[in-house]
Length: 110
Length: 118
Image (cartoon, rainbow over all chains, first blue to last red; front, top):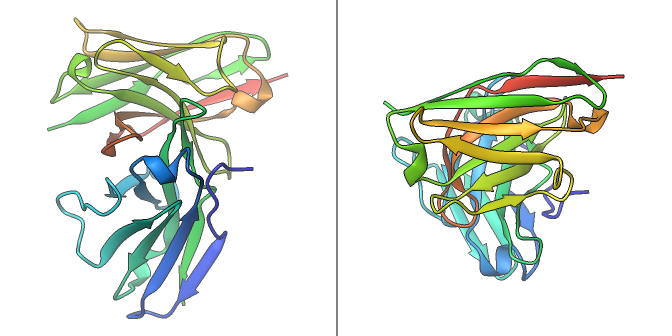
């Protein structure tokens, strides 16, 4: 059971938009920055979003992040088949004094 | 160019010990937060431990007392000493630069596989 809650899977058609939610509490998302990662099969995860809504260099603006209260959301527009991957949210939990991840969401582009 | 290369993963018996290494290039390990993240087979990501630039360390409850994170500044290398290994420690271990409390993990190694067998 992960500290952060993500839907196990989401799906959408190519070109469409999808959102992935990440729900936590005041000890983690509510008072710390959220980052998002995607992981293609057999590869290491890659940073998509940091500090809630910032994109690292090289990440297209099709990817966006937001945070409200104790929840965060990753948005992906203009879906491509290459976006099919597992997506994870992560943050620090001040009560645990430990990092925490969501359980991951598998994105299928139909 | 920033690069992280892990090594040391192996098939190890239950109760045994192993030390993972992460050789960094393109930046200084001593000036950055460095974190170990693991992923059990067909499972999600799990945060393991972080070493701050100031030398502070934090551990997941599941490894506290058994794992020790450290670095060798002269070799620009991060380590994870793992003792009293159990089946639940079987995973790919990733070395990362950064911390979840702020900017996240901007660089990841390729991972090294630790398999604990009984």
